[in-house]
Length: 465
Image 1: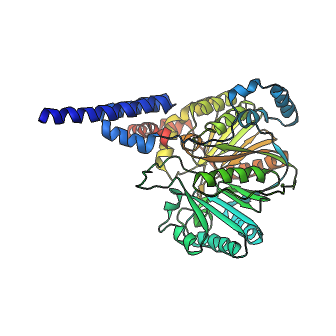
Image 2: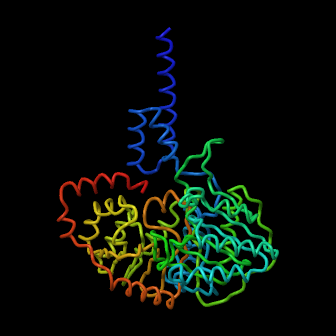
Image 3: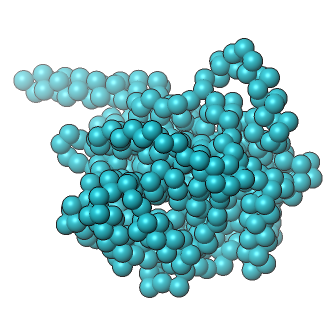
């Protein structure tokens, strides 16, 4: 009898291990991560398979607009790419990845920190007449969060269609969550990839990290800012962060509406109403939306980033709170610096996730040896996400330069083809750089043995940081 139970147990173990192992081989693209998961599953079949189900399954089946690499052979496409690159430098990579041309006629305004962004966003909600669409990763249940809920409720009461999409992990940064306030004010909301027991849903990956506010399909606010007191540099939160957000008015908003509609439908929401009106031109900037996530748009932002860095002639200036670049981007930054391009990366002096800082220190010498400058920005926490290339291009949005953003999260990027915006963001970078201290090779070499062991161990978890 005991032998039969043992054989049954071994059969269950074998089935679980083989099933999980086959899934790893079929779907995990990173060879280092695949090797690690296979080792864990072989040694601990049940525990390893459970951990893989929670943290390792990082793709969802969702159709998204994306041009296949094979489409390069389409008649006339190369001629269109040449036409684009003649008119707008660095427009080619984004076109090959998305299949979309930059949209001209956009008005763009930069909002610095929550003190500048939130009043404009709240005023725009107050002025809305027909529709308010809001998507946020973190939506804190604090003074700022409740101010947004009050404005959204007032918009609903005057007849606007209000839709709120929140990430089911991001809303848990505050307790109790903002959901109670949304319910109390009878606001239509959906939770993106909800955490639940039945049906099972426990993934801390596959989160929507997008931050978008759309008013009457004419105005869009997008960038790096969550909703909460934490985005107020002079606010009461102990987690205060400096950040960049952008106000777009013009044709780009139409693409933002489509992206929100896809996320809203994916989260169980009803289709948005069709509007006959188109969004008219409101400025001079050409912009392009880059949708990225662990679905059919995987690697979109990474490919665009690699393409524009490789095209740089003068400078590559990057602001990011979490800097753990994939090997491909690391190589592009090294190559740019070695050819004489001014490559500077601004990161927080003290990261709010220590493991990210430790992992960066483990790999930083490769960049410093190539001539890349790493600048450490003093508090408050630098949460800005921006890349400035030469004198005519910038990339902004919600994405960090780390594997979590570029492979595990749903992100939004906006390419800005405009010399005036480039100049404004360059001035901001220079101003912030004046207070920064550079990270040097001597500092890295001065770490003790325990610190180097800590940094090396942290680097092992880079694919999931």
